[in-house]
Every structure is written in structure tokens, then in C-alpha cells.
Length: 158
Image (cartoon, one colour):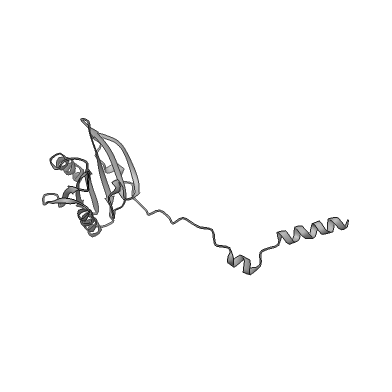
């Protein structure tokens, strides 16, 4: 009987709540920050040559300083390229994102007819433009090939 009493006392002590000092030393459980809200704009991407599309939470196509957006992978006549669209929320934010892209490009050329820029980000050619509250573009094609694709893309943005 005495053995049961000792065993019961041990169980009570081991199940007791921690003291306030011990509780304050225990770090709160880590919570991951909520991912940024990114709108799915894959339906706006042109369909011709579309192989796949996805929503990327940040840095679509590894473009620096860019928030999340939608990216389409394309293949037409053996040429592979990407198109991207970012819903910036308003016209001004889209314009600032375009300036951010421009700052990351080399050999930049202003495209007056599109209100955008064409240049390279090292190994890839980038054609980017802002329309309404969107920043969009074509990556991986020379300007003369990307321009008509970008015009069709821009016509889809409302």
C-alpha cells in the first residue's frame, strides 16, 4: 500500500503544471509568417503555345525585387520562353515595379509604344511593360519576336 502511495505522489509531481518561472523560459511555438496574398492571373496568360502555368509567391522568373505573380511556360516552333503577370494593385505600383525591373536589366531600351523596357538580365532577354495595375512581360525572346507577343498579351489586360 505504501508503494502505491509513493507511486501516486510521483505521478502527481510529474504531471503538475510548470512553475511561472519555467513557463516564462519556454519559447512560444514558432509560427511561419503568412505567405503574401498573390492573385492567380493564369487565366489572363495567352493560350497559344502555353505548356504550363503557375502562381509564384515571390520573384517570378527570379526577377529581383518582384512580388508574386503568375508565370506561363511556352514553346512555339522549338523556341521556349516565359510570360509573366503581376497584379500590383494600382497603376502607380505597377509603374514602380517596371522601374525596379529596368534597374536590374543591362543594355536597356525604352519601348515608347508599349511604355516598357527591353534588356537583358545576364543571360535572358526581358521585355517588360506596365498596363493599368499590371506589370507583365515576355522573357527569353529577342525584341522583334517578343514585341508582337507582348502586344497580344497587353490586349488581354483589362
